[in-house]
Image (cartoon, rainbow, N blue to C red; front, side, top):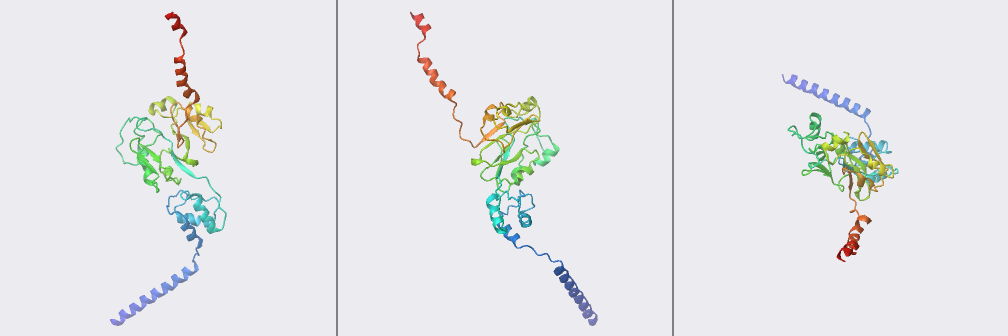
Amino acid sequence: MDNVIVISILILGGIAILAAVILYVIARKFKVEEDPRIDQVAECLPGANCGGCGYAGCRNFAEACVKDFNGKVCTAGGNDVMKKVAEVLGVEAVAADAKIAVVRCRGSKDCRPKTSNYEGAKTCAIASATYGGETGCSFGCIGLGDCESVCQFGAIKINHETGLPEVNDEKCTGCGACVKACPKVVIELRKKAPKFRKVFVSCINKDKGAVAKKACSSACIGCGKCAKTCPFEAITVENNVAYIDFNKCKMCRKCVEQCPTGAIKEENFPPRKPKTEDAAAPAKAEQTAAQPNPEKKSENQ
C-alpha cells in the first residue's frame, strides 16, 4: 500500500515537472518584449483614465504613443503633458488647441415649464430612451446628472435651481466624458479661448420657431438675424437652429445683441459699456428741461 502511494506521488510530481518545463519553453519562445518607454510615458500622464484621448485608459494611450506619437493628444493633461511625453520619446510635440465643454441648452425651469412628471430610473440615458422629457422641448437637457457622474475632475455640476448642468472652467480639461454621456448631445467641446470667454448658441431645438418658443422661452427660433449681422460668416442656420463656428468666431458679440430670445450666450466677458446714445440721453433730457418753453411764455404774456 505504501509503495502505491509513493509511486503515485512520484508520477504526479513527474507530470508537474514536465508541465512546468513545457510552460517555461513556451513562455520563452512566445515571450513579447515590452518597450520600457511605455512605463516612462505612462508616468507622465495624469492617470485619470477618462478616455478623452480615444483609448481605454492611460496605459493604452502610452502604448499607442510609443508606437506612433503623431496626432496623439492627452485631453486631460494638455500640451504640457504631451511635451513631457515627447521628451521621453525623443520627438517634437505639436501644440493642440485646448478644448472646454459648453452646455448648449438654456432651458432652465423658468423657461421650460413642466408638462409631465418622470418617475423612472434617475439617469439621463434611461430617461432619454424611454421618455421624451418632462417639458415640451424634446431636445433639451434632461437634468438627471449623467454628465456630472462621469466627470473625473468635478468640473460639471447640476444646478438644482435651474435644472441645468454648469461647467467649472477652471477644472474642465476637455476630456469629453460628459459629451459622450449626454444622450441629448447638448454638451459640446469648443476651443478654449483666453480668459475662458465663450459665445455660442445655447439651444439645439430643431422645431420651427413658434413651436420651439412655446416649449422654451429661450429657444432659438431660427430667425437668422444673428447670421445676417455676423461680419465673419461664423453663423449658419440649419434645421431651424443657429450654430456658431468657434473657428471663425471673433467674439465681437454683435449676434448676442440681435438675438430676440436670448438663445446666444456670452460668458466671462467684462460688463458691456453703455452705448453713447444711451449715456447721452439723460444729459440731453436735463438740457431740454432747462430750456424755456416759448409757447408757455406766450401764454403767460
